View 1 (cartoon, rainbow over the protein chains, first blue to last red):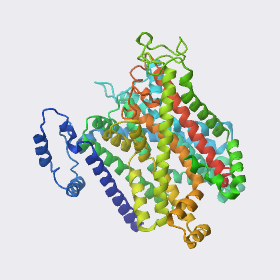
View 2: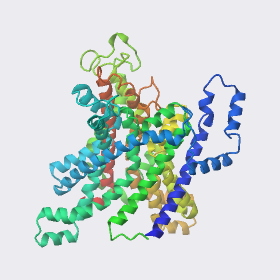
View 3: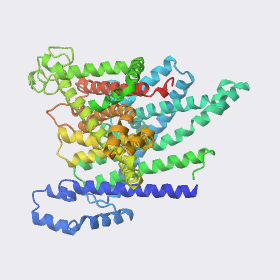
View 4: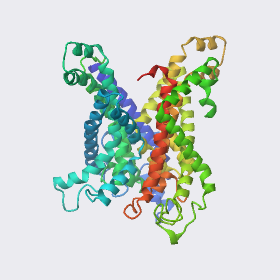
Length: 316
Length: 295
């Protein structure tokens, strides 16, 4: 297990290194490079720009710059935002909580409802419910998240006036009920795609399990069907689901960006979009790198948890 | 792509395979429904505008915000008085075109990378596949937006960028297929006969790896249409006044209270197209892979 862990960590580090090169390339391929934001100002002469370039070390050869950037990145210095001169990590840190709150809630919703739909679909295979759930999942995967958000706002905020149309809290308020009321719509919108994925995986995973010998044995020895299901089938069917949770990170992050935009949710995705329109490349880069890291960590955790949960798996 | 898409049917004994596949596809009711829907969407987008008395860019301030089914404009007008149906049709041209061409380019990249990695293996293969893994670490929308912000937005650049962020799945599929196929007798025989690497890869191996690629291609069209709608909605995709289903939703949120159809109609079009392509992909998977029968 520990040898495997070391190897996986090594692979993750290698990938992170590749990711950092892609990120660095994007930052420097940008029109005007990292200087673009300053070049927008008409009060800057070319001389000023040259001087800034020298002060920021942008006149050095690219490999030197990359190495310097990488070392500082690894030591926790992700640069400063062009917008307000705050350290990038602090800027992102201020928005990360809102995004994690949204992602976590959506994942819980998806596991609960998606898992439940998947289990029912597998038990009543080829029933009307199963058919509708399968087709519904396909439609849910095809609906643009932002559009689903707009429709949800139209129905529940504009029409019925039940829930707020955006933001994380009412200004001046901040009580738990207020926070929860703001969380409901964006969380459901973000959860839709996840729910579809979870229901499909749960269904096929459970179907894989119920055809196995030990389930037949359990039935043959006269166990009631619900006991077979909860005691034998579900436990094993749930194992691959652990992996799924870790692998959903890219989908979740992407969905969160769109959801946050529609619901003016003050999270990392909206910060990313704002930073792009402001040409705040250090923040753009920082979020790009952080999201890639979160994806890598998700993958790694998926493997680890799976091995920990299933004694049959010996990673080596 | 059309020539490669028909490859499984072109090989000698597969005439019956193709018709059997077609029969299996026909049994998949939702896939057939999807195929019919896509055909209708294509006809409407490419022929419809000629039948309509309204131009999609004609601004008519006197008739702004007319609701659907209320006047001369069947699906109403937008905030500038432009006919919604005409814009949906012209937007459909753009969105469907982006979806198909982005798919074609991303297939080309994916097949090339996957074939090289799978055929040569070793250091080259490992390096290429690690590159695939690395690009997959970025959530697609983040990468797409970061790149779109760098480049002058235009139809072609959006297509290329969407392709550049969606070729990795195909590369993985093709790599696995080619790696398995290259040890098979027909590939070894071709090698023994002195065929060039290029001939073996693109004439012998890739055509035999086409079935899962066709499925992936269909799903990639769905994904590309979705991605176009995301970047255009966020303002970094197709730029107005050229309509696309995504950028029609761009301003819709502001008018959600007074003119909800501006938001609802383009979204329905996207959902319809994407769902259809996804169902077709599902049907093709069942049709082209007989091993999945009965699941």
